[in-house]
Structure formats: C-alpha cells, structure tokens
Image 1 (cartoon, rainbow, N blue to C red):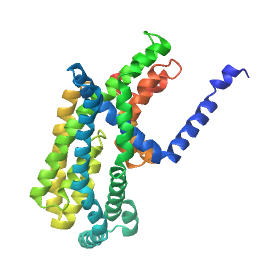
Image 2: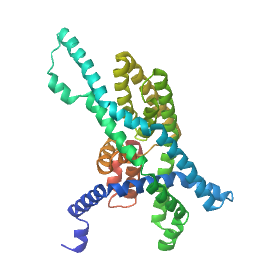
Image 3: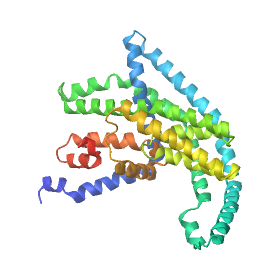
Image 4: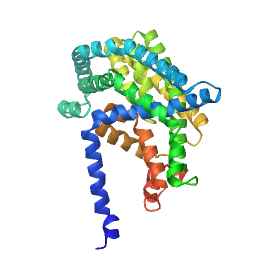
Length: 341
C-alpha cells in the first residue's frame, strides 16, 4: 500500500475523526470558552471595522465593544443568576406536584375505560425528568456565565488580530489564495447567520418574558433568556424552550394555563421562525433539518449545553470548509438542505 493510498484510506480518516472528537470532548473546559470568544469576535468584527472606517482608533473601538458586551453580561448574570439557583432548589417540589396531577390523569383514564401500563408510560414520558434536565442545562449555562474572564480576554485578543488575518493569509499563499476566499465565505456566512439570529432571538426572548410575566408564571425573565438562547437552534429550539415553561404553567395554574402558554410559544415559532426569519435570512443556513437535529445532539454531547447553542454555526463552518475540497465535497452535499443542492 502506497503512502498516498494510506493517507486517503477511509479507516484512517475515521480514526482521525474519532481522535479529534475525543480530544475536543476531553478538552471541552478549554475549547468551549475559546469557541464562545471566536463567535463573539465574529459578531463584533463588523462594528469594529465600521468604527475604524469612521476614524475611531482600533483600541478605542475595542474598549467600546468590550464595555458593551461586559455590561450585557453583567445584566444577564443579575437577571437570571439567582433565578437559576432558586429554580433548581424548587425542582423537587415541582416534580411532586406533577406526580400528583398525573395521578389524577390516570384515575380519569381508568374511569373512561382506558387501561395503560403506568410504569411503561412513565419511563417513556416523565415530566419530572424533563424539569430536572432543564435545571441541569441551566446550571451548565450558568457555569459558562461565571467563566467570563477567560472568554473576554480571548475575545479581546482575537478581535485585535482579526483585521490583520486576511493579510497574513495573502502573504502565506498569495492574493488569489483559495484559503482566503474560504475564510471570507465562512466569516460572512457565520456572521450573517449570527447577526440575524441574535436580533430575532432577542425579539423572541422579550416577547416570551413579557407574556409569561402577564400570566404570572414563575421565573418569567429566566424563561425569556432561555428562549433567547435556544432560538439559536433552528426548527426545534423554540420547542425545547417551551417545555419547562409549559410544565411550570401546568404546575402553577393547571392544564388551561399550560395550553395558553404552549399556544403562545407555537404562535411565536410560526411568526418569527417560519415567516420573519426566512424573509430576512434568505436562503437560510444551508443545512437539512435532519443535520440540524443530529448536530444538536453531537455538539451537545461533545461540548455540553454551549455546544447545543453553537451547533448550527459549527456545522455551517464544517460544511463550507468541506466544499473547498473535491475529495470531501460529497460530505458537504449530504449536510446541505435540499434547496442548496
């Protein structure tokens, strides 16, 4: 077997992929802050370049961006920091209330002549476990909120080097470098997606927090932040964000309130996710729905809750990078949506 055939062997490629994934999972405490800093830098690079074009010194622009992001971060910590801890403490009480309500449901079903194996149904669908999963996910996100220093420090240095990176690629591989074009394509695609998604997610979070506050649901502001974050996950993010809020409405006020809350989340998902975002975003993220779901599970397993939030930008980056290689272009086609093929 020649060295070239060994290098192109599928088994070698699979083994390399497994090693890289295992390394990322083992190093996730270091990788996750770095990825957050990278995507923050991608979002903030256009405002920085715009300020530079208006004559604002680079250092002043960086400091203004850092001040804005740190202020938003402090606001976020103040808004939901105590709510996460309080909700986690109250989860056992909410689980007990859900068990009581489910007991009434079983009695009604048996009285109606419907007999089901309670243990099997409970194993498949357990609302208490869903609340516990929501609490664990919030705790994971809360841990990243408190890890701000490393993220902001990395963000500062990445953004300070961003303007000179294309010039370095040109110096290494020439002005017509494919690497430079691929870098621009990745940066533009991810930046456009993150910019538009941030605005629509912010609108979603504000509407959810306002509506749940009017309904008297506990931790309404926290659920608004959760809706903002999970809206970065297309197709299923709004559904995931709705589950804990609907269950909490069921615990507090009963089935009618849960239906109202669920209907509101559905309305927001239709108006913002299915009507507004496609009009603004154009051709979209270029990924199939199945790939979005699989990437959510994969990146969530590798990097935790933050990996779920960054699953689409990460997979978009992989798809664009694969398109630049003739040997791997078939993988990019598999990842793309039907409209992109």
